[in-house]
Image (cartoon, rainbow, N blue to C red; front, side, top):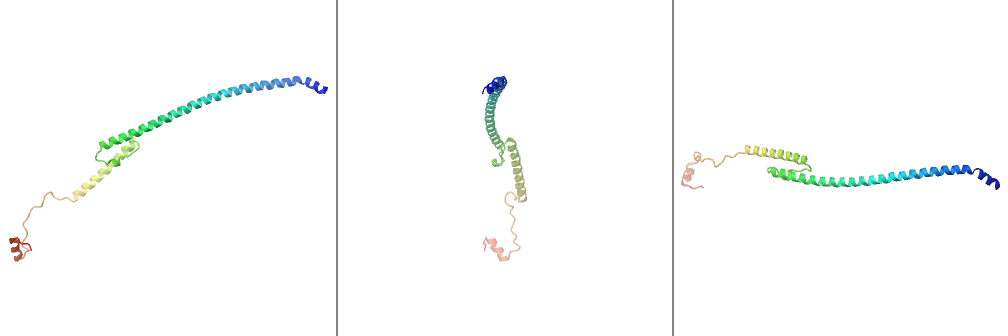
Length: 155
């Protein structure tokens, strides 16, 4: 046993150095852990701020979307009021451009129908008023039918 004690006592300096090196490494690791924890806390704070900003942006987007839908509906109502010759059911769209496009299509349809009706009316023109009265052609009637016609009897 004494040999082992001497060996331990003689090698104690080596153990002391190794212990000191390990303690130094442990302190460095503790410092590194503290720095990483601070960086993590900073990142957590940054992530929380970004999430809050994202939620606010989504809220503003929803409000803007609702406002846009309301503006497009108002614009559609104004377009319908300004174009009474166009059926309101033909004017649709989720955007101002969509409403304008549907108005253009509706106007083209109304114009096409109008031309078709005018063409049909031109082909089937009936003169206004009753036709002029003309004398009845009695040349094809027999003498008896002529007499009967003159007396006013219709048989």
